[in-house]
Amino acid sequence: GESVGLHLPTLSVQEGDNSIINCAYSNSASDYFIWYKQESGKGPQFIIDIRSNMDKRQGQRVTVLLNKTVKHLSLQIAATQPGDSAVYFCAENTGNQFYFGTGTSLTVIP
Amino acid sequence: DVKVTQSSRYLVKRTGEKVFLECVQDMDHENMFWYRQDPGLGLRLIYFSYDVKMKEKGDIPEGYSVSREKKERFSLILESASTNQTSMYLCASSFGGQGDQPQHFGDGTRLSIL
Image (cartoon, rainbow over all chains, first blue to last red; front, side):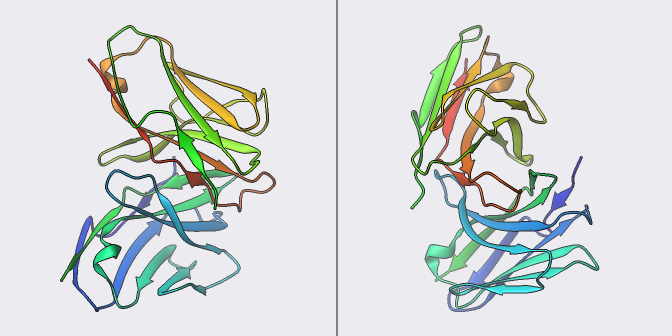
């Protein structure tokens, strides 16, 4: 099966700092990637996506970077806020099926 | 905004019962999915459907079945509930076509089997 993992299970950052959450994927044929945010008691919420023909995509306060050479995906959150505290996980799409990582728990320290 | 609604947030059932989990989406999405989410394992796909009356097995279909009689509704059925089916169940939907469409999730049903 697919292996989608995250380098760190937990991450703590000071409010106002930038956060970087990493994800490694195993299938070089994966062509579409998504970052999700899951708050306690809620379902995963779409944050940003990127296709394999891109290296970088920016949203509001978030940037996703894709390095296909080393099969690595990262999510950067600028000026992290208390409301950003949640579990973040990546998903890769291969052959019309998504494979999800287990998540990194981000805690923002006021 | 896409709205995926799961009928129950919390559910407690007994071993051997037949359990129905309902999911409705309001965006006319072709694709619908059922996952279970367990600590340390991430989301695992149980069943999915690309169209009305159609269903496909995911990675862990054993002990489950599904029904899609209408485009907006996708039901997950536990034929005879067992304690190892205690989990968070998440429903998702997406537009059809190629795989490069994001899945949108409901808030989940936390199911406990006693």
